[in-house]
Length: 113
Length: 110
Image (tube, each protein chain N blue to C red):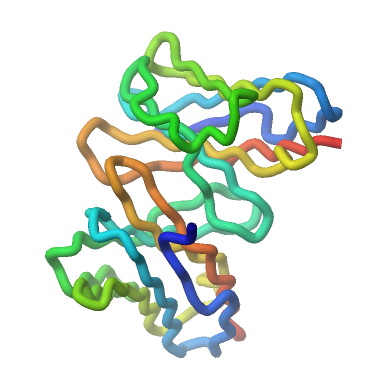
């Protein structure tokens, strides 16, 4: 079956611009996660959704970052006033409720010039 | 604060050899310890995982050894193959949030 998909695969933007990154989880997965992976590092947790609500957003670095999941399926990560330090691969993962395995998408590589 | 420390950063092993990657954690609230494999340009893929009430888990050529008292766990890859060349991440979970190690770039020489 289809895995987690993320669009776009690459995004280049200028400092100060607004960007949206999209994640389509595996069908039926109620839990959705966003992570950020900087070059040469492990993924870092950003936010976790259970259904439509953000169950844990403790990893969002500041108020320029926001994520939504209005219908409990697709999620969008929104970054306002982008900075060069936001450049990274943004990974999305999903899982079935009350199960262990998080399935990751291929990521969106964001480059802020 | 680095909650999961992984070593080595890079590892070169001859084909057929054993690859060993180590991780240590600090928080005793972690309840699940997965290992992920990542190829360039791809997302991490679950390789094998263990819970802290088990000391060892084996799946094919991959084995996790877990030492709860020492707060350490390791991945062993037996009969390493060139196709195993990738970056490996250990992780630990607390309340659905995965905390990852820094990664180990593994190269298997043919």
